Amino acid sequence: MKFYIAAPFNQREEVKEIYNRLKSLGHEITTDWTNHKYIKPYNTNQQLARAYAQEDLEGVLSCDVFVLLSDGESQGRNTELGMAIALHRVFGKPSIYVIGESNLDSMFYFSIGINRKNSLDQVLDELDLL
Image 1 (cartoon, one colour):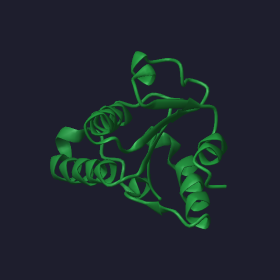
Image 2 (cartoon, rainbow, N blue to C red):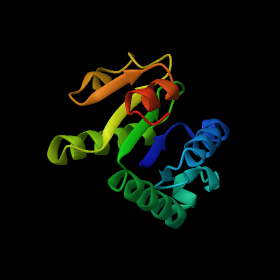
Image 3 (spheres, rainbow, N blue to C red):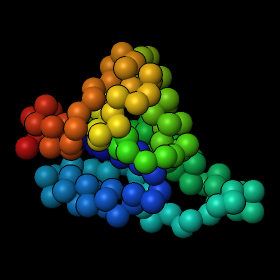
Image 4 (cartoon, helix red, strand yellow):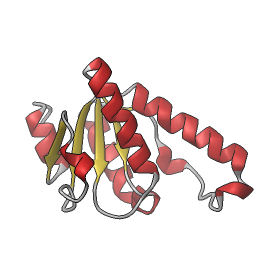
């Protein structure tokens, strides 16, 4: 399956571990944003910001499973979640999971099609991927 993981930039080491685990199980990562440079403020890095945004949105478009890490603050992951919700409503995919201790903290986490779990293991178990 193809996965996209949305998380705050400062959790990229945790996301890399998730990527390694998913790859070891034979899955694909649609976009590896963990290799992006830190480019804030965006107004001084507009071309790179545009390229990163396009790459990340393409990753959401092409995934089978969208996973959002709910802990921490991030504007970008919420944009990606909104796109995943819209895709799910129109096309029935991707499967959407919000994981972590904060998986009850946004009204959008209760949208139709969103599954709230505590861990990646619960996601993989539900999808019969373990």
